[in-house]
Image 1 (spheres, chains in turn cyan, red):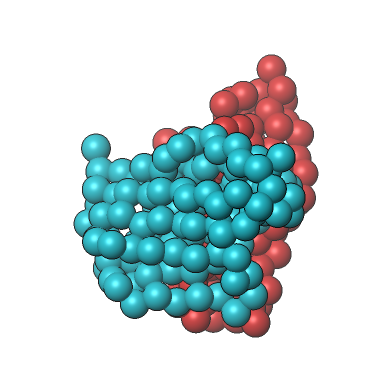
Image 2 (cartoon, rainbow over the protein chains, first blue to last red; image 1 turned 30 degrees about the horizontal axis):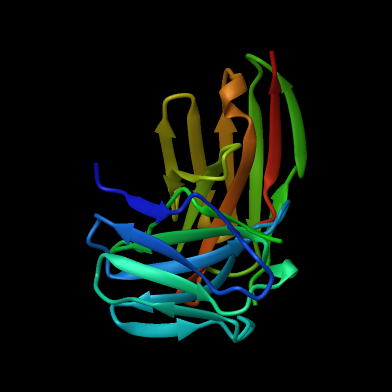
Length: 111
Length: 107
């Protein structure tokens, strides 16, 4: 089945230690998104790629970076995680119809 | 920016009951999606519904774009329907989420 895959599902890191979350898709969609969702809140868009064009939300901290080496893969790098970065990170994709499909998420814990 | 409001914020149902969730939005939108976030955190697509009515099993949705609202109907609720239901609208090339409705179905 075509899908959005995120690895790992659970990630524990230490305060200040860089961490990378990965997302892959078999839907061949041209747009990929990264969202942050904190407890009891709605998902918040961090950035998205339209093909290779990177679009950063104005309020996304500089601590968050992203890479999209090809159509199928997208990475979220958190350079120096703080306690406030503990959250669920959701990857999504969309194609021609703009309907977004989400992966299962990576729950990040910062110790 | 656009405001997306969902009601009610919380809902407790007895198994087998029906319910209606509402999503109001403050401006014209390109499309609207309903999601169910399960207890493990995954957002499951329920409906892509910029206008009109769609049905999928016990769930159906109606969007009246001219009046800027959408409704999600859940009939004969089951415990597996528990979770958070989000409405999200496409506005300015991005998805703007409402705050969600937390649904608990008791057996």
